[in-house]
Image (cartoon, one colour):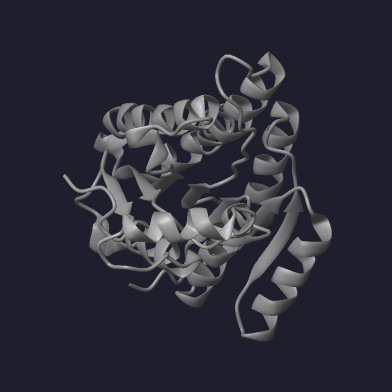
Amino acid sequence: MSLSGRVALVTGASQGIGKACVLKLAERGATVAVVARNEEKLKELVSHISGTGGKSAAFPMDVADEEQIKNTCKTVIAEFGKIDILVNNAGITRDQLVMRMKRADWDAVINTNLTSAYLCTQQVISAMLRQRWGRIINITSIFGQIGQTGQANYASSKAGLIGLTMAIAREVASRNITCNAVAPGFIETAMTAALPENLKQEAVKLIPLGRVGAPEDVANAVAFLASEEASYITGHVLNVNGGMLMG
């Protein structure tokens, strides 16, 4: 599943699932534009990829800022000539019961998790249409499929990504562009590391494979969907959840 000659842009690339996706795509031969707010972490990631013979560049950006998205996408295309693969991974949580949730926390999560994916896609889609090839991959969540107490904003944003994925897939399929989503379950990241140990143990009991997932499990799915081997898959939600949700 070589990605040699392809250019990928990954948002939320500085840690967790995003970082794992960057490393996997670079390993498969893609040139990767790594995008996140933390410039220091991005530079460390680029340095690591360079040390392993890969090619990447850091583009500090806040996905909640539309102008930054527009400028960054233009800069990436100017530097690398194109964007073949877009991985919309950036995401945040602002958990609270819906009766107590502040509008600002709702807006922040929707803007970061969902609106940014729409904006990033909008900025790269013209180039993909012209070259008649593209891969758009949205990182959603099992909680966008089953909901979660205290995460009305997060679950809504991730469910919205699934709808966005299917709509885009229909719009661009005739130009050899696919749009798919990956829905992780319980993955060991900085976001889940903050959970109490008893909650983690309870979560594991709900997973038929009996273990928490690793960011690399998600990255492998992303790399597959980005490849030629997945050329006949579009509008699909690929569950990476250890069997926590089936069907």
